[in-house]
Image (cartoon, rainbow, N blue to C red):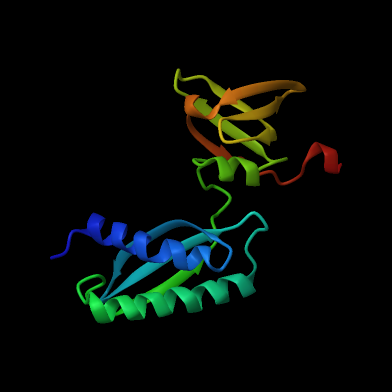
Amino acid sequence: MPDPSASRARLVQLLTPAVAATGHDLEDVTVSPAGRRKVVRVVVDSDDGVTLDDIADVSRVVSDVLDEAEQKEPHLLSGAYVLEVTSPGVDRPLKEPRHWRRSAGRLVKAKLGDGTVVTGRVVSSDDREVVLDVAGVRRTLLLAEVASATVQVEFSREADA
């Protein structure tokens, strides 16, 4: 039986350049059993967001790459699979600088390495740090200090009222 982590790593290696060629970033690839088949879930994003047309375009490209790979490496997925291409959900963890950049203006909750929890709106970010508006006060966090962070779901913003 193939090593699932090796298969995932190989899928990431195969799909990253193909997805990038469509103008998107490969955020995640998972393979999970579903009866006799497997579900290959590919999560993509971009600075401009992801439309249904984008999902269709990426799906065609990913499908072609997987079909070609299965010819050369039949053990990679070991049989029938269902392909799902999707965009990240609102609860996606903020791990990469691009995630923070794409969350500008959004309310986030960040847990720091020392256990402190900070909730604020993303004002700006770069490859090293993020600036949050925390109750009207700007606070700069080094990304290296952030243990985990997620966008908070807001059903209505005060500014919208």
